[in-house]
Length: 209
Image (cartoon, rainbow, N blue to C red; front, side):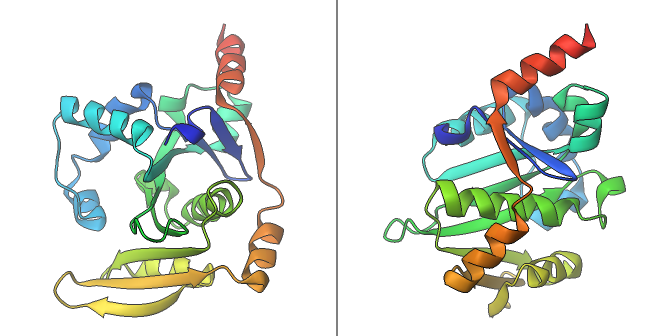
């Protein structure tokens, strides 16, 4: 989506930045992992195909993605995005007849960052963005049955299991944003700040000089 091409969201553990061409080589290296391919139900792509995919994420109006950055390293060490990348978080508008439904995915690709709350905060921040900027009223997550850690994480974010597919070996979980859930989400995300990515990136580059 073009709507987030100059947006950075900053939380306690992570920052979410738009997926740009500078992130593609590191992302491509991640997706050579058979484990990540299995967890994300993805097929390996060539580097050129990965660049093409990045452009589609930027242009297509039914997809929104952010790269997940280690917020502390990014700010305190003023390191470049590619050196602080830990994963990504995505939101798909899967139903043309219901633009308020968003399917959320989060991947923490760097093993050292798993199980430390990075994925949970990234998902929370994407849900906050989806609710406040994209008009999302309900979220779905489709998770491999073997991915117990991800299922547990979404349960902590108030998602409930609605179906299980034995064919695809995945669980579908859903969260409907009624007034109570909206209040809960907004309260939990009250620490999240939004800025222009171009300005924060320029500041980071100047700090390295």
